[in-house]
Amino acid sequence: MALSKAANEFILHWGEMGSRWGVNRTVAQVHALLYLSPEPLTAEEIGEALSVARSNVSTSLRELQNWELVQATHRMGDRRDFFSTSHDVWQLFLTVLEQRVEREIEPTIAALGRLAVEARAENQPEVTARIAGMHAFLNEMHGWYRQMSKLPPNTLRSLVNLGAGVTKWLPGKAKGEQ
Amino acid sequence: MALSKAANEFILHWGEMGSRWGVNRTVAQVHALLYLSPEPLTAEEIGEALSVARSNVSTSLRELQNWELVQATHRMGDRRDFFSTSHDVWQLFLTVLEQRVEREIEPTIAALGRLAVEARAENQPEVTARIAGMHAFLNEMHGWYRQMSKLPPNTLRSLVNLGAGVTKWLPGKAKGEQ
DNA sequence: CTGAAATTTCTGTTTATACTGAAATTGAAT
DNA sequence: ATTCAATTTCAGTATAAACAGAAATTTCAG
Image 1 (cartoon, helix red, strand yellow):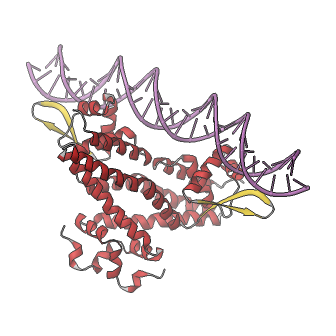
Image 2 (image 1 turned 135 degrees about the vertical axis):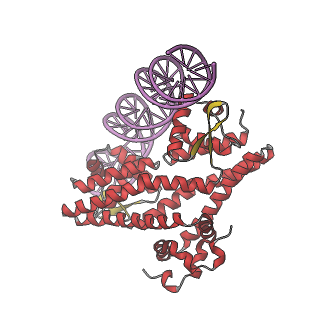
């Protein structure tokens, strides 16, 4: 399956973006390919399209499945796995966000809580203040994220499209003073 | 300047987080150290505290200055540069966001626009639809970001702390249907 | 139970990035 | 103009991540 020029460039760009955000380039490329593909692909086809070793595809697919971004499906009379990903960008985005929050942000918040206690015990008022400051910020953002992630997708989209317009609906109190 | 245990662990954790998000570990550590420090530090002191070569510190500081996260200051009768960063976590966050949007998101949106045109010209309706879908999503998010970034910081914080509570102020229309 | 296709695991190699230390440059004081 | 501290650049080295290919494992058909 030869890729069109546009598809190829999209995949390359996505791989590049991935590596800038801490995602393995090949993993990002595999995901981009599945995102573009109208139907599920076998590992074999993926490796061929991207020119990477079969084993590398296997590892990347495993990774994507762990992130809940890719699912394996099957066909009657065919033992191979067929892989696919959602074509709904919002859903992909929310999945990635959820995973990174769970794997990185939440453990960090917990660690900062411990470190703030430790810094206080060590009698380091400045360090305590800084760590507590970071801790409070992440908690604030995390609380916001948790609430937002519970909203129905359409409400979420409406809020994004409202943009700064939300403020005009709010009573004065919320607008300003610290 | 020996670091306290809490400070040391904070810096290590921050370096680890950095490398998961595509930021050089040492760069992240230097920033973490400056964030904790009550007063500006020289490159010499930074290298000593983190046990990295002077040249490496120099490169990392340059990088942080390019990101507008670190500023050099001076003292009378001292030729050395003293480096510092904001202790306001919100401001740090917004700076990082602004920089990454400018360097990565905006160029990606532009590239996706071109690729969507190209895919259409190549007569690839599915690929066109996917690329256009991604393009539309990033545009949506980018528009939201631009509006939010223009709000006064206090308004922004209020919105975050309101969380899903915003929805109760909105007229029904915004709440639901696509 | 055997054999073959598909997949995964593992080990050695490659590659990209980070880092060091030396050399070069800058720039202020004399 | 010269010197010297401070900083940056650069070339080589080290390190860690990514990758390929072989070997091992799984899974299903017969």
